[in-house]
Image (cartoon, rainbow, N blue to C red; front, side, top):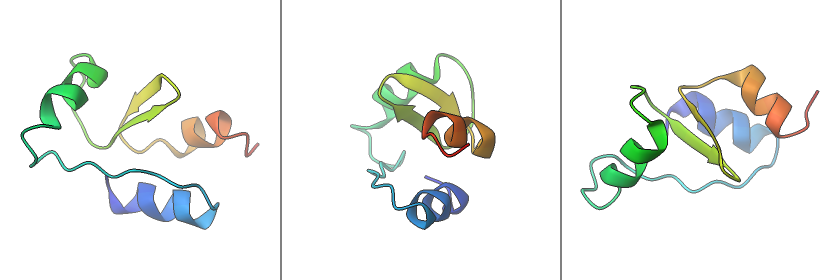
Length: 65
């Protein structure tokens, strides 16, 4: 997970699980979630997935607006 995402989630008090793409066991799951889109982080919030650090998407999904 990128540093910006970690800082954002921590600032608002949200817990997260950070999976490294260097772990061969994690890569297939993250690739499947990304559905062909390239970038990091791949964020899954209760089945809603985004690729890349999108502050607006996170705020909307987390009810911060």
